[in-house]
Image (cartoon, rainbow over all chains, first blue to last red; front, side, top):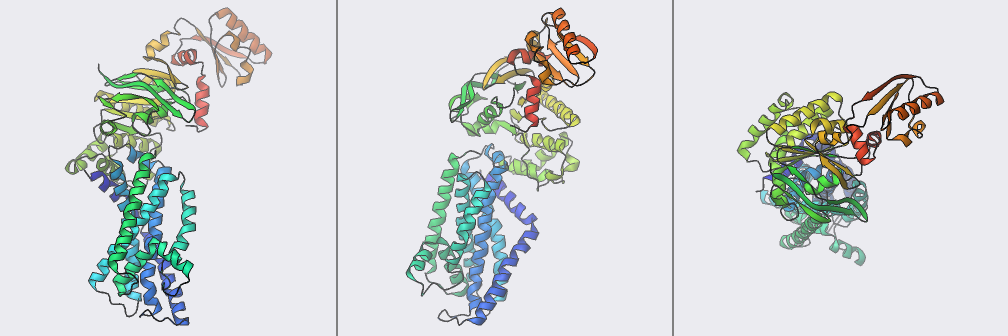
Length: 251
Length: 320
């Protein structure tokens, strides 16, 4: 029954693995953030009240950032598929839309997990005083997956509404920076002015960042179960919404 | 023979534009059925409805006993689709592409390798199994796309302009392949704007213009409507421009190809006279005049009023 979803998933993963250059290339961005931004800022400011040094604090944020950017990219690939007619071939196969969406979403999420895991390994080596246990790493991986499913879902919603990848990419380029900056990836969220605090509460990425940091460092604003509920609820609703919208669209 | 496809008033509007206008026709099991018509006639839209890429505005079709409106998954299990542009994955190998399709079409895991090998061998593509799809020639790409459409043993395959963009040799070998395929009992539904192709390949042709079927018949029967009307073909010493022949066309349909003018000649003496004065007026030398046996092309012009060269030009300009 799920063989079609599996085929779609495998295709996405194969496509990702074939482009090894991209995986290594994409590791460049987190290295810059941690190595230059993190080290530089960590040395020049006093970072207190969180219980760790800035570079260590930043690490999990950068892991979330990698997942954020690569998942959005995976979402965009759904639109490219439509643009180049690949979606058509899938749409003429005798499979339900649910299977297509399952394959696409998990395929995209797996691709971005490969990136995210590479960054996670990097962070484990760079962060000082960071000795997370195996359970912490497993929890972090789980939250990374949840975050990435949510963001591929956002891509899916975009794909069902947009004809051209260019338009969606422009919107995401506009959205992705504010989402990233207001997620708590770069700075702690206590002591913020009211308007910014509201922004961080409304930003679903916040809960992903908080959960990943909580799993790796034991430092978090919300308890993990709370983050899980919020992020899980968001993920589920966005995927259902995408599935619903894609149902009515034509390849 | 039983009807494997039957459409019942199949209609598609795009906004106010009527793309397909109440089509009712049937395709017999095991035949090669061709949709022949110019661009924008509704050929592709009809296929898109039959394979479930878009829903009809009105009417429906029954394919192998299943309704495209209510049982589209059953229909999809029974049909294979070869789109106009090959949409297999450039970055996957020939074999991986077929394995992907096998998964998509629920071919049981244990049978996949065998099925893929069988298809690649019968399509002479086995030696290329590890080549990336993107590296294949156009002809081989189309060949593999046809192979891919057969992965789940469909009873019918739909091909949209299968030979467009192929060189002469690849087109010929693809036509041969389709004829062989018919021998295995697969029904073939194709669209084309090449009259010669429809003539050589199809058992029956539906001529479609502006969303409506003008006629459905065998190529032979279609030709018989122009049988008896002689066609005169004159060869000149230099190329003829279409605009020069306006005054000739009062006598009947005229078409031009390079140095050649061809016309339906209901009255031979008058046509000859007109050709001679045409030559004098434009200072052309007549090299040769022949009466030729009318072909499907002549029948097509007579039936539709659409000039075959117009169809060719439109296609080359890259319309869909």
